[in-house]
Every structure is written in structure tokens, then in C-alpha cells.
Amino acid sequence: MKIEIAKKVFNTDDENLLSELDVLLSTDEKFVFQDLPKHVQEGIKRGVQQAEEGKLIPFDEVKKRLSQRWG
Image (cartoon, rainbow, N blue to C red; front, side, top):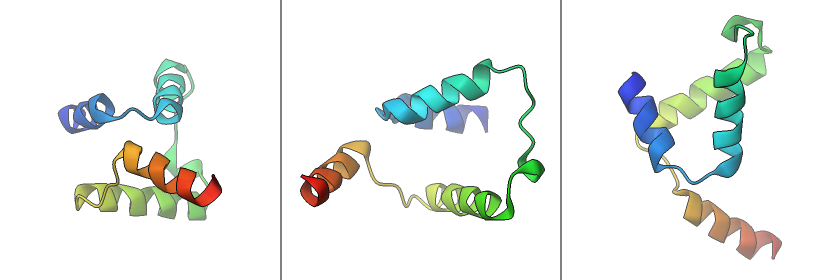
């Protein structure tokens, strides 16, 4: 699992995601999935499932789509 996560981190250029990961990995607080609201848990599970199925959009494509939509 560590290697797969490391690959995903290495392949991303998403500064927001990298910042969030840095905060998560730097904190002394324990992250307890069960303490998150149910809808947040479901969203995380859905995102992980999509990533495992290869249903990912490269960051450059996301930027392109957003710039087309929002100018």
C-alpha cells in the first residue's frame, strides 16, 4: 500500500493535495476515519474505489477543464 500511495504522490502536480498530505503526515494528531461525518467517509471510499479502478483524471486535464469552464 505504501508503494502505491508513494507512486500516486510522486505522479501528482496538485499543490493543494501535496499540501494537505504534508499537513496530514506532519501532525501529531491521530486521524480517525470513523470520526469523520458519514458523507465524508463515503466520499473518500468512492474516491479510493475510483482510483483503484483507474478512473483518474490527470491534473493538467483538470486544470484545462476548469479554465474552460471558469475562464
